[in-house]
Length: 151
Image (cartoon, rainbow, N blue to C red; front, side):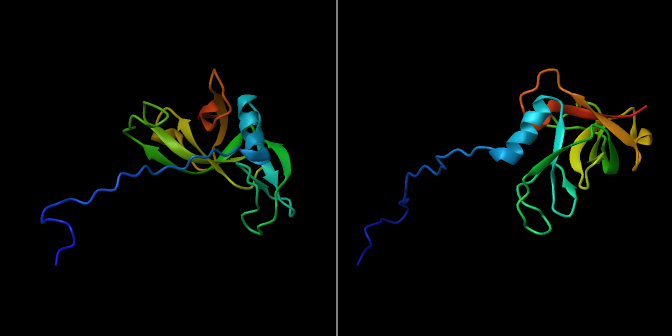
């Protein structure tokens, strides 16, 4: 008895896998992105007073809703960093730079960014930084072109 397939036949199932829906950013992420476009940084304030940046809809510790937004920064402090000697084409900067976690003034959690610095010796944990804004801003994280050290 045969199953209808000859030896060497290939079974094909032409399928298109897609997710045909779109999602809005919502009030919290939307406010963050709008703030970026306007050169304003915001975070979500938790019930215990912590400020989460980038803002989240839910408290990462308690799971509570986070609806209160507060302005933070624009300056911040480097919490940790990693130097990139040879950037790749998709990196935000073409020359050597540091990935930094920046805790903005008034925030309790850091956000990731690229630090443009003169060299690895210029970067230290605890250093103060400020965002350099893109000339044309669209409400995207790339509206922060990079971070630079405060002189």
